[in-house]
Length: 331
Image 1 (cartoon, one colour):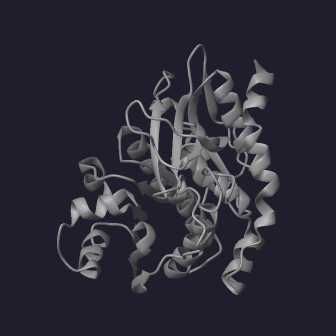
Image 2: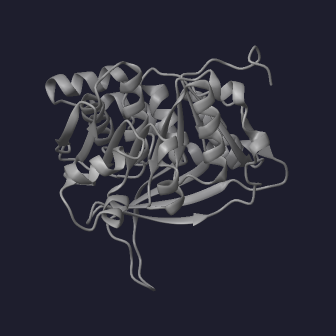
Image 3: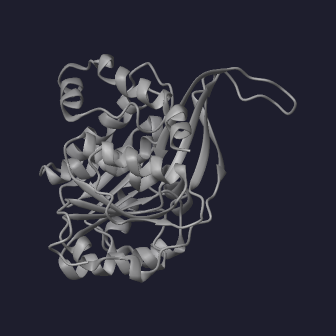
């Protein structure tokens, strides 16, 4: 595909779309037990797709390189991304296959979550699926999980074009450790941090990661906030506690999308982390990974006043609650 045919986007992501069926229960029942569902929602999912959806809500442009099944779930995922302004021209629907599907259970009594996943059977991405010119016209390339063969290939393409590479490193991986030099913005989970650094002072630990290549290193620590380091120095931020946590599904994905949006706006890494923390906290006020993603105006209003205008999310929540009907109508 030529550059003329490509749509200019600020962020290109690589991942597989997933459909999330999200339910809210008071408690997860024991074996042979029962639980009532208080709320349910059908939403697009996936780590990078949800980050791109957040980018779109916040006013930036993104596009996904990925593969889904050619089933109704795949169609739903594409349509949901498109509603968020995400370019879907590089999503391949693999004929005769199923899209990844996840049942996400939000537990009110613990404010925890559990996942039950049925993986799809669409083919895996190959180097031929990576469009160098599409990656090369972006400002950032967003990857997730680990630096596997495809992500390494994509990162090297980005390097050739001067595109910055961001990763959502959800779990510790030797492959990622071996390829830190290909990553510009390394944002990892608390699980990754605890596995890599069972001891030591946070600032010194983060300096060790940055010394191996990344310009920015951030570890998200859930309700404890986040820590980070860059050429501007070390920082530690407390999490925003809004008092109403409905579901943390997708909170990390949304954090990454918001962090990249702030980078695009020229913010410092610490400012990016604060902005991303706010977006992520607001998201958790609604069920699922996408219904509660705020737009830029809502986020800035919260950062200025500490208040969230919940009415901004009512229509979005209602639309996602009707997701099953949408799926049935497509059959």
